[in-house]
Length: 113
Length: 510
Image (cartoon, rainbow over all chains, first blue to last red; front, side, top):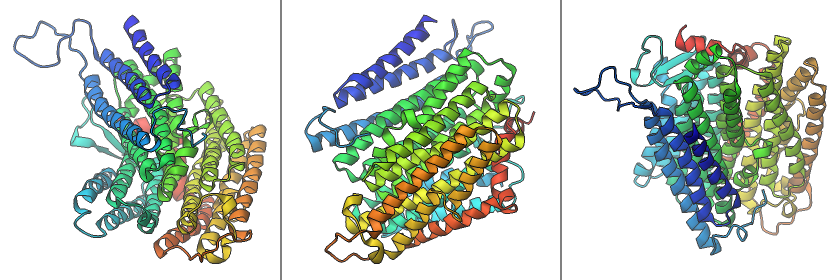
């Protein structure tokens, strides 16, 4: 159970980073930490104690216990989507740097929410 | 029939691929292709709605049939509610695309614009059709990543800043949704909405499930820009090019926000009183705070964006009232009335807010400004724009005989019948403040003394035509209140939400 809470703690670390950091790149890094904590959570869901890979081979043990392959498939999809999101975020961050000449969000405040 | 369902995703996805490939070679290819695709899908939706969608249609992706009654394929489900939302997505998408044909001349990289727009529509159609939790997440990300890029399309300072803000908040929302999907899979061992619903029914609600529901409400609430999570909306919606603002405000927040919430909380989870109350309170807050934030705005598009928050609040309170009545075992006909009002307001809002953003785009196209203080006297030089925007303004402020009046009336009548007197009073008050705010828009934009020295001419034909079609729809949708039309379009959608367990029964066949 501890490992799940540590995973959730990592999620909160990422969230804390997004809220407190002032640098656009650091915000992107915090976002990625948060993202990977969720991926880790998915990997944990699929894990079964003493399980083997769900592949039919000749020398399987008696009454094998398989790990769940579906969360792994999902996490692969989610990583690809995460790649798209990170690429998009970094592309915009670089464009902002070109326009404003800074990564500091205190100086990038034309809009008021 | 069922083989037509995947076309909603395949056609826009294919055109998103074909546009960058052939767009360079053939002139006008990108505009023609996307318009034709959306025209076909709109006609198909009308055909499905009016041609008798008696039974929900399901399609199993890849042809994987259920094993021992357990669905293993990804299901695409087309029932009353999906058909209703698909109509909103494709109709507004068609008109926004048609508007963009002329409007896009202000920008370069037209191929990218139309490719991203069709990607966004493919994503939204997917979210609406899918019957699988993880597939919903994938389509949702397709739609929102395309919209992040479209918000930044102008690549000026404000656009980039708005897009970054939108991406960070939208990304957090997506992660909350993904976490909730993971937790649901952990508990139930399946991703199919119908299957999850069947498993959850046998288990008593516990803290774990409540936590998952809170995660989903925050995630989809952020996508729908409900009030505690609204900060990104005014920036993103006002910075995007006008047809995209119309799509974001008119369609995206409904398809990936409200629709997903409705589908999950009515058809997947068992309704609980606490969750219904939370949803109603969030809706009421959005309705009231949104309009007060709107009234002080001088940037036309920001004003419209804040009104989107407020008007979505109407939809959410209506649905929330329906949920509370159904949980407490109140009068089911009143609950049905409230939900019908909510869905009716959803399609109305898509039409009039889409039109208002197109009007704002037309004004910006000819005058080059969005600041209301710098406009004035445009009534004579822009007859089509000013007439259509008057229609839309009357519609959003709830003046008969426009559609906004009837949907607000249904919501208020349902609130009084269901004894939610506070909500009824708030709904009326917010409607009055909305009227005041749109009188300000009309007065400053069209009737004050003109401040423009150069001659201003009416916008091109394609832009005028989409605005005229939308204002006609504003009037025509009032017909939905009459029996005969209501039974065909609105009632099937309401029935899906009222008969909460039917959805699961039809798909798993149990």
